Every structure is written in structure tokens, then in C-alpha cells.
Length: 97
Image (cartoon, rainbow, N blue to C red; front, top):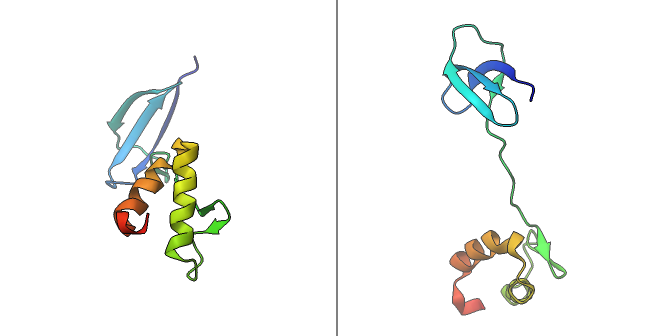
């Protein structure tokens, strides 16, 4: 396994850091000698824009259509959308499903 090192500013704290890594992070420590880069975790966007022909970004989409698309996701047990389903359930409430 090849070991690499990079340095820069922690994007969350602004502190100067040096990170040593291979297949995983070996160490992370404060460093006085840094490159002019910002180092940040690899954020993942779990956004879903629609399902079953329903566009969640369409302001004219009805609650019934959104509810039907969510029921379709439940029926398929589509786990990659589960977090969105949970959030929408909390937002709309069970009265629309």
C-alpha cells in the first residue's frame, strides 16, 4: 500500500492540518507547513428529484402525487431513498399518505 501525505486548511475548522493516508487515513495532525488547499470530508448528496413519474421540484405537484410516489417507493423497498422518505414523512405527516 502506497502512503501519501497532503496538507492544507481544515474546511470545517480553518486549522492547518497534514493528513497521511493510504487506503484509509493513517494520521491527521496540525501542521505549520501547509499547501494553500482546503481539506474536507467527501460529502455525499442524497438528493432525490422524483420517483414514479413525479417531479419533487415541481411547485405544482400535488400532495396526492407525491404521496403516491412515496407509496411506490415503500412497495419496492427502495432503501436508497429511505432517508428521503423519512424526511418527507416528517414534513408532510401521515395525513397525506
